[in-house]
Length: 50
Image (cartoon, rainbow, N blue to C red; front, side, top):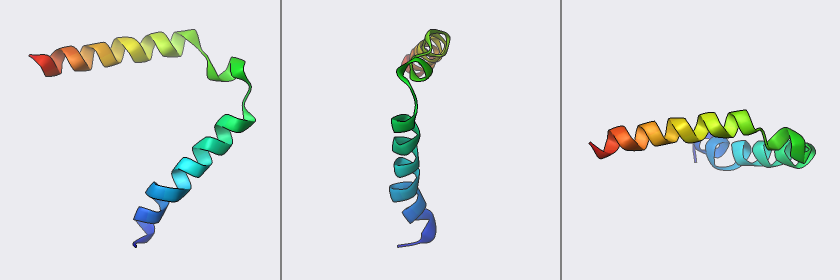
């Protein structure tokens, strides 16, 4: 296993889980961010469906 694979498969998910576990719910749920993400995802899916 190469070092890059180890980082992607093991280290990044572990760091994300740690960051989420240490954050409060208010920091995780941001309505402006969610709206921007949903609009961006909608645009990408719409363009991909053409």
